[in-house]
Image 1 (tube, rainbow, N blue to C red):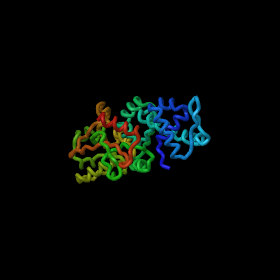
Image 2 (tube, rainbow, N blue to C red):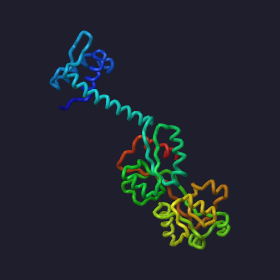
Image 3 (cartoon, rainbow, N blue to C red):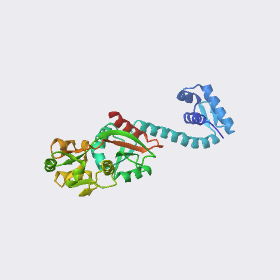
Image 4 (cartoon, rainbow, N blue to C red):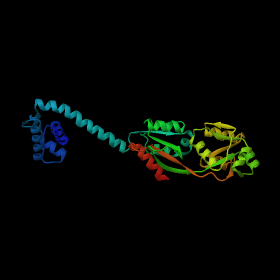
Amino acid sequence: MNISLDLYRIFYIVAKNGSISAAAKALFISQPAITFQIKKLENQLGISLFTRTKHGVILTDEGKVLFDYVKNGIESIANGENALSNLKNLDSGIIRIGASTTVCRHVLMPYLEIFHELYPKIDIQIVNNLTTDLIKELRNGNIDILFLNMPMYETKDLKITFLTEVQDIFVGNKKYYDLTKGKLNIKDLNSFPLIFQKLPSNTRTYLNNYLKDNNANLKPQLEVVSYNLIMDLVKAGFGIGYATKEFIKTELENNSLYEIEVVPKVPKRFIGIATIDKKTPNYSVKKLIAMMTNNN
């Protein structure tokens, strides 16, 4: 049978109210229209659903059987509509975010603080890991959205949204700033101990491509996973590190770190937001993306 859901909805309202007139008021349509639709449903089903009484209508035995099923369906649909309304109004929902510790700390947190203040009922979950592992989590559906250092060289199934531009620099403490006089050719960095992030981090990949483009072969003395550990080691005088200028504004201002200018300058890059290209993010995720990109 190909029976309209609207007929079942009218049947449900009439049965629930026990009255054609009450159903007409609830549905904002005329009593004759209600009667016509009930007759139409009965004709399509081939059974009588209601018995008329002085006080209204009551379900027949067959009508009672149908009502039990229709009630569950109509109320489930209503619950679904309410759930969607809650999601749309951000009264409920979940955002599963992937980000490196560095991006989370220096880029994401200010936005999340505002978003959480505006929509405290949204459950925010954060997964920290290497970008390569987080991309797998995104593709497997274990996270909804990924914030990452760009460029990312394998994006055929991903949608990348620009968030903010950043500038990578080389930094040292006061000792190395004085030794280099604050400026030197990129190839001359090999005269000093260097501290870089390990591959396969996007930051290290970007650095290696920059070096390759300038025929420079730098050999780091230390390679570590943690960006923040690199900054701590540089402050302690272990060598010259590779950093993102926007992430160390405080350190540059209080002179615990010093920028060492290199020639040629490292090109700017950007922080991006990655989602699966052919998958529509849930409403909470779309709201977060809109808030972040509009603010930029």
